[in-house]
Amino acid sequence: MGAMVGVALLGASVTNAFAADETLRSLAEERGRYIGAILNSEWFGGRIESQFEQIHKAQFNAVVAENEMKFDATEPSEGRFSYGNGDKMVKYAQQNGMRVRGHALAWHSQVPNWVNNYKGQKDKLFKVLKNHIENVVSHWKGQIAEWDVVNEAINDNNNHGWRSSGSVWFETLGADFLDSAFVWAHAADPDAELCYNDYAIEWGLGSGSKAGFVLEQVKRWKKNGIPITCVGTQTHIEISHETTPKNVRDFAKALAELGITLNITELDIGFPKGSANSLSAKDYQKQGHLYRQFMDVFLEEPNMGEFMIWGVTDAHSWLDGSQGKTQGLIYDKQYKPKPAYDSLIVSLKAHAPSEVVSPYSSNTPESSSSTDVSSSSSTITIKASMAPASLSMQVSGHTLLIAGTQSAMVDVFDMQGRPVFSAKCETGSIELKNVSEGLYVVRVRKGSASLTKRIAIK
Ligand code: 9MR
Image 1 (tube, protein in one colour):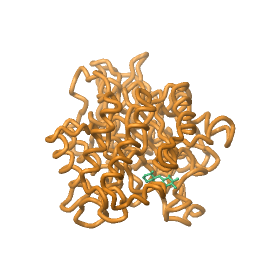
Image 2 (cartoon, rainbow, N blue to C red):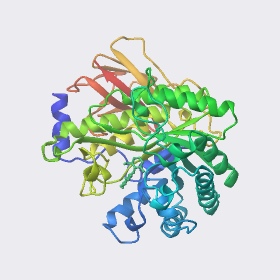
Image 3 (tube, helix red, strand yellow):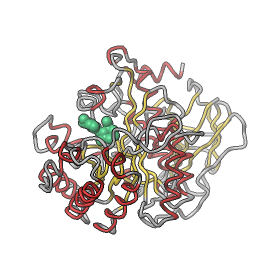
């Protein structure tokens, strides 16, 4: 019955329960974190649908160029640097108070032909890479907060090592190019964060894994004084990749031991290509649930700082062009927010600002008691927020027990932020009628005091 209520609400396209002035951006900012999306210089200033710019500015406080800061865009011919499009985006970001990620300095792909012509000439190619990094990083010194210094340098074999073929850098320079790239980037902008960025990191730390290989290299870099500060997990995943949020959490914890930040740099969660017309509300809710799990991990791990989505709307996404995937973003082709959008809002709201640590400032939480696990085996209370110490709640089966007051307004939302239950409690306990098994957010309000928790009804 509860599930039916949820579906009915979705069908009627009831808007979510949260205030209109609460955006991904405002909620992330309150938590000292960045949420961002890619940009191309032709995507603002009235050159595509006006909704794009409105949404981009309202919802995001970080930006990354999809293509226009890559090697082929910034140095299309030897020694001639082309910064026009990148400058436009940096200006846009500055005017709108956004952090800029720089993507990418040393990458085997999107390298212009003139570079490939130097294949085999070690001294020359070292100079080419050094000159490129020095110029590009100096040009945006103090304006680009963080660079992907090396991108996708690991091969796709089961037992990962460096990508030894198909990379002009590795084939000519060997693994030294990676260490050098970090050193040159650091010399050009000592304040910039410097990342190693790659895909398939979200597959976990098992033996022979890419994540395991990255970890080994980060240890080596730290030991040798190579100035790496962050790793980017691109996280281009599919709807069936249900274990990936946990893998990202484990990897964040492993990097925390090394004092390294982990950023989600290119998230999209695609459905199989060709499935767009047959996707149901349930499919989109599943996508929302996965997005939400990534946001939960992101907010709960203190060494995560940026949550970047590789696009805004399914109308403009690399997935449909070159991938066997589709519909992977949080707005649909008509710029309507999908359940994934609401799920991100719910996750942000379920993590009180005081409980979220930012790797970029000293907003350490006052108390470390962010997790409140109830003793009842049928109830898991996951998060509390903004509550006076006297107000608390617990769920047992379908019964919500409120301590600290007899009467309060009780609202229950599904993971997409849609109301599924609302009633006034008069006796300190209330039956959550018609709410089916699953995860929800419960809000209890008494006057100006409010307590919000994520609960599992079993
Ligand atoms: O989204 C980018 C697409 O427009 C380009 O054609 C493609 C060319 O390599 O690069 C895409 O972005 C990639 C990013 O730079 C690195 N990680 C994988 C991204 C998706 O392919």
